[in-house]
Amino acid sequence: MENKDKPTRYTISQLAQEFGITTRTIRFYEDKGLLSPAREGQHRIYSPRDRTHLKLILRGKRLGFSLDESRELIALYDPDRNNKRQLLTILGMIAERKALLNQQLRDIAAMQGELDEVERRCRESLSHIH
Image 1: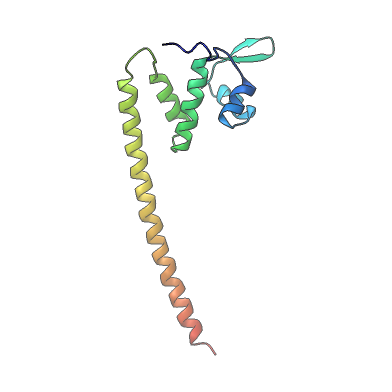
Image 2: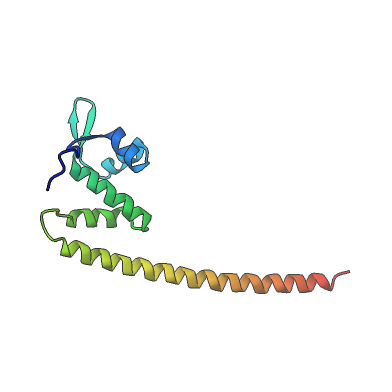
């Protein structure tokens, strides 16, 4: 069942307000070719497809995906199909991101251990200074 109350056109201000971002951010994504609004004079008019693309970009950003990775996901997005390829791609990206984060956690733990050791040695040395 189709929602007749859902807008079919959005202004840049409406999208900025809805997603809590600046209009400058939206124009940046447009400059990068991730959004393609229609023009009515000097005004940008965004479609529901643009809105969905913006939502995917922002979700990707929160997950740590690059703009190129977001571009790849957008290219795979097709609301008229089952999106199996897109979902499998997302799962692969998630696995890569999680592996990177786990490595960063190990690196941080190792660095903390080293800092603790140097701190211990400094305090020990200080305790011998009168």
